[in-house]
Length: 132
Image (cartoon, rainbow, N blue to C red; front, side, top):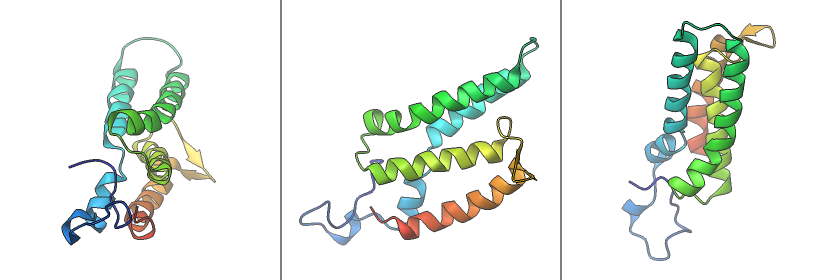
């Protein structure tokens, strides 16, 4: 399954099965490889028995992955649609809020709690809004 979302305007003569439905769009808008990289690196950073500023290191890793996500989507998975890359990049930020480690509190709420609410709403809503 290709990663870029296909719509009716992308395929000149398309059978109905070639257009991505809600479920396909939902899966394709989750940046799973970058989320996995963050979880792995967070585990290494937080689990290591070394001294140092772990919080700063988590922020650096987060920043690098925020930059790497659109590059990965564009060059590796061949996603060319800027909107899809933007929606997936924002989803990564929400996932990091839920996973924890980098963000601690947002608007006075624990980031994991607020992030969970936002992530569920965002993940379920965006495939209705963005059709490719």
